[in-house]
Image 1 (spheres, one colour):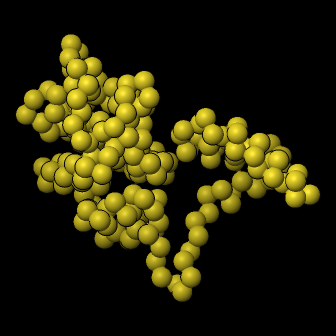
Image 2: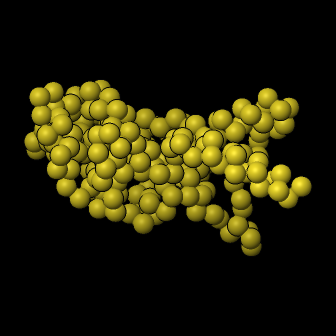
Length: 193
C-alpha cells in the first residue's frame, strides 16, 4: 500500500510539474476528483492557525476582511498596503484578478512598459501566490493599457533593471526590488483615485 501511494504521488507530481500556473493545477486536481466522484472542496480549504489567532492567509481589511493568499497578505503587510489601496488598482473577485488602474506611471515609454510588467507580477502574486508570469500575459496587458512600445517593446525588456528577472521566452519573475517597486506603484496609483 505504501509503495502504491508513493507511485501515485510521484505520478501526479510528474504530471503537474510542467504546469506553472498554480490555479490551473488546482483546477486539474479538482476536475479529476469530480470525475472520480469525490468531493473536490478540500483543495480550497485553508488551515486555521492553532490558538485561534488570525492567519496571514486571511488578511482582514477595513471593510470586513478580504481573503488573500498568504504570500500576497505578507507582501501587503510588509509594505503597509491596505485592501482599499489594492482595490484602487486591482479588482479581486475570487480567482479573477484584473488591473483596473486608469493609467500606468512613467515619464518615458520604457518606464511604462516595465511598470506594467511589475503590476502584472503583483496581479499574479494575488492570483497564484507567485509573482511569476509569461511574457504574453504582460504584453497583452501592455496593449490593453496603451503602454505597448510597438517599435521598441523588446528593447525595453532587454534591460528591465532590478525589478524583473527572466526573459521573453522563459517568462518573468518579480525580484525583491520588483516587489518593492510594485508596492510603490500601488501606493502611487491609489493616491490618484
